[in-house]
Amino acid sequence: MFSLSSIPLWQKIMAGLVLGILVGWLLGDHAQWLSPIGTLFINAIKMLIVPLVFTSLISGIVSMGDPAKMGRIGGKAVALYLVTTAFAIALGMLAASILQPGIGVEMQMDNSVSPGEAPTLTEILVGLVPTNPINAMVEGNILQIIVFAIALGVSLVLIGERGQPAIRVIDSVAEALYKLTSLIMACAPIGVFALIAVVAGQYGLSVLIPLLKVIGVVYLACILHVLLVYSGMLALLARLNPRRYLTGSLDAIVVAFSSASSAGTLPVSIRCAREKLGISQGVSGFVLPVGATINMDGTALYMGVVALFVAQLTGTDLTTTDYIMIVLTGTLASIGTAGVPGAGLIMLSIVFAQTNLPLEALGLIAGIDRILDMARTAVNVSGDLMVTTLVGKSEREIDLDIYNDKAAGQTS
Image (cartoon, rainbow, N blue to C red; front, side, top):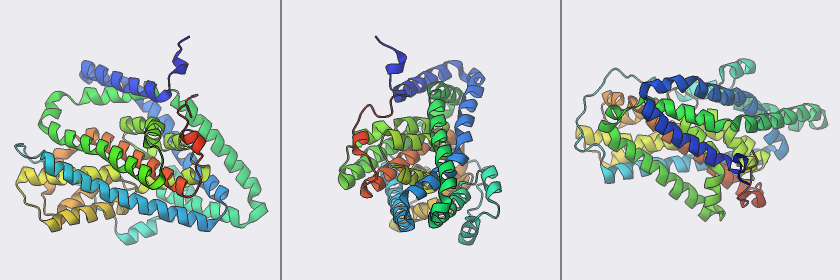
């Protein structure tokens, strides 16, 4: 007998996504009435971020038991994040070079948008260590929380038996948070429906049509990056079935797309990694929080497309050196602006400054930033899960029975 409980969660979420788009376009501005429902869903997920990052990191470090292993895993993760970011920005530029979204478009520049300043290297390094860990948690400063959790986790390992009572409490809280994530995800189809309906109602065709080509190029490049780069790396480097990675990541990808928040999707990403991809608690609890903070593949790809779009729009000829500078600047800026509010706009302004593109063009993109942000966040989260899977396989911290099980994690 057919029942809704037999339908996989990701299919319910996708149905909510499609229905939300249709309802949003039909209701227009009236779709704002659904905004509280979407906000409640996002708030419920964000409620989990700080305690889940803190407990999962410590649980992951303790389960590894070896600080040297943690350093090795961290090194692999950061290296992979940088490599995929460089691939992403290059793919974005390639797509924009072939499809030329800026040719034939005539639009007025808006100089009212002014991005913030990127922090200096000294500010980044000093800002990593919290003077007050509790305050870092209250403010949701993920980088500082990560540093404190790593330090505390290593210390608990080093004190041996005396650390076991605290470890048991933290492990118990982490497991309770994983369960709470599953309960909240049961409401995901409704939450995603409301979030997407509001966005679809906000952006009418009159807003989208002038910039429809650049939106299409960004979305196409994002899809190609996930299907070619991520899937290709898993197939070639890890000898894993990329289709299972895609289906196992769908819950997180759809939530990322609808919420436009990598950090907000982190609880769902951890759940997907553990329950659907079979990644160990140690690797998923360590690599995913780091990725949610520093991995900006989607933003880098979007920068590559937008930089060439503005160059084509303004008739600016970019040299080979400019192309190289866009790749290098975008890759390094993704680390330099980690955890900074408005990081995408800051990264874009740095690239524009390096290639002599007008900063006034930022205003053109700001108007459709939410539409583009959804796609690039979905790519960021996809990248987090791909790197976590790759690291898990290289460290033999993956349960292949779960990874290859199509029904894994479908009980919720």
